[in-house]
Amino acid sequence: MTARIAHLESRALIRVSGPDARPFLHTLLTQDVETLTPGDLRFGALLSPPGRLLFDLFLWGEADAVVLDVAADRRDALLQRLAMYRLRAQVAVEADDRPVFAAWSGAADGFTADPRVPALGGRRYGDGVATDATEDDYQAHRLSVGVPEPAADCPSDRTFPIEANFDLLNGIDFQKGCFVGQETTSRMKRRGAIKTRMLPLAFDGPLLPFGAEVLNGELRAGEVLSGRDGAAMALLRLDRIGGDLTADGRRVKVRRPDWSGP
Image 1 (tube, rainbow, N blue to C red):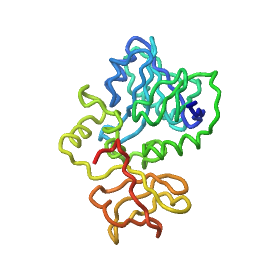
Image 2 (cartoon, helix red, strand yellow):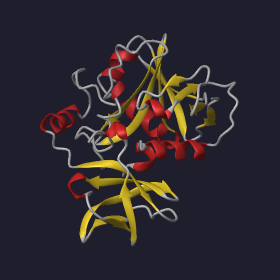
Image 3 (spheres, helix red, strand yellow):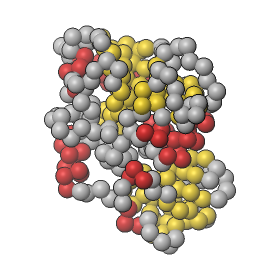
């Protein structure tokens, strides 16, 4: 089957180069960067010191650089943040204007598999790619797979990466040692103190309002984050997702993906 391909205009690139590029990023990000080889694609994040999610990102290995795939409307903020951390590191951090493409539902030449979930398809950076789908088509596919997109779904600076399923989506290397926000993240994983997660909802009718309460009877079970007609992503309390749920006066059902575990 021929893949569907879309240009992701909501994503943009940052190129980090220089002799210290990999060790510099390795000490900051949730992902192992020192072992990133040319052609490798990994998923990770930059957290705040208290361990909250600031930037979700992909890391693409090049021979002499690491390319970060980030939300386009957050690129300038990430450039500023990396400049703040740079200090004496021998690195160059600059915007990279190559476009970002996604392919799914079939094989596509030149695309690297999405490291989060195989069903998401793959990504590619650079020109010369013919498209036959829109970014909205891709977002509908992503939601059907049940994978959050933190830049679009997470309340800014409030969400922990494990709540956004980074531990289930290969977004955190718990063996790599220190990174910004590592202490809180590792403690949550070690203690199993995961009370809320982002999970997809299914329902009838139009898009649910952003921030709409998800209720289990009269108990608050979570809030709607983003979505479309008939489907949404929500941040939910795991101990309250059984039974009949409602949001905005409508019945909703948690659609727990296979990759998310029991």
